[in-house]
Image (tube, rainbow, N blue to C red; front, side, top):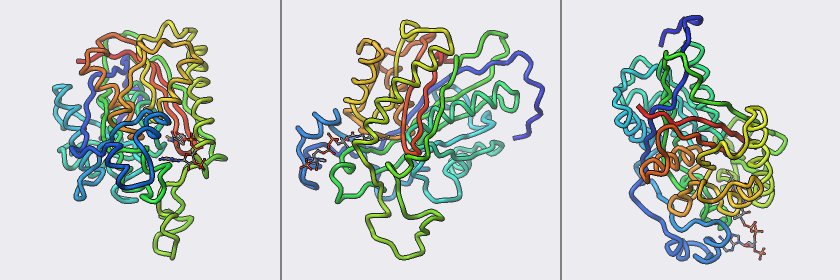
Length: 339
Ligand code: COA
């Protein structure tokens, strides 16, 4: 894209469309009982997950991102040529480089678009939205597609039952566009953060420059490793705190939230956070039981399914909140304004 700062005028950003793609293959808890030492009862009671989608052997992350991107564009009634920037939040890219975003932009025909990945793990979609809003409201872009795409089934250790059961594969995203109607931004605000001192609580040790995959390594170090209890404690704290900090900054209360769509990682974490915040469960949407944790795809996947279920409707104020590796966290309040 070619951008000229200062031409923004009165433009504001608007969340105009949602879309998603999930692989066909379902891996249920009873399927998992045959693969690892676990039970449906343990998984449901500890996490709320009943099944997850698993990509086909010949599918990589960009294959999921391409289909999700096309779904967003179809829902928006726009063509790929309209896209100025394609951002793919992912921590499971096809390769270290090229980026998933570059491959996706090429495949969907977004030839004039800038394209890049961002890595904030499960907080990535909200981080990506913040970038999209900044690009649009500064006048640098008119139309930004953000597609969270993850393929965690390739990075979980089949020998580690505490993580193997948690994750699934999916891609989902949103289109952020400029409006020149002079109204307030469709995005009320963002609360983003990171605490790298806890980076080792959720990591893949091998494959980067700290330990290149070209050097000898223990197979287990090439898989996701997690201190589940520490991440659980962190998640319950930041889910509550980041929402409260954002509401305070906006001079709003939980009563101003029409719908809450939290990161779909664990039902106990969600229940704990909404209980502390005092948000009634009927104002919270989730689909964790069908997909497990799909990382950067989880929030937009839930948003899109909330729309399909008629739970998310035009004009609603939606609070999104997530957490993930880094450790990172992110919250945002947005008005849903479909085209
Ligand atoms: N099936 C059966 N038993 C299992 C199991 C499984 N899939 N996974 C672990 N266990 C066992 C453990 O081995 C342990 O057994 P022990 O007491 O004999 O040693 C027991 O269950 C309790 O393990 P623990 O790790 O304390 O369980 P937990 O209640 O903390 O639940 C998680 C584990 C992973 C579900 C939970 O810690 C969690 O959800 N953490 C947050 C993870 C998360 O959301 N990560 C994503 C970040 S984006």
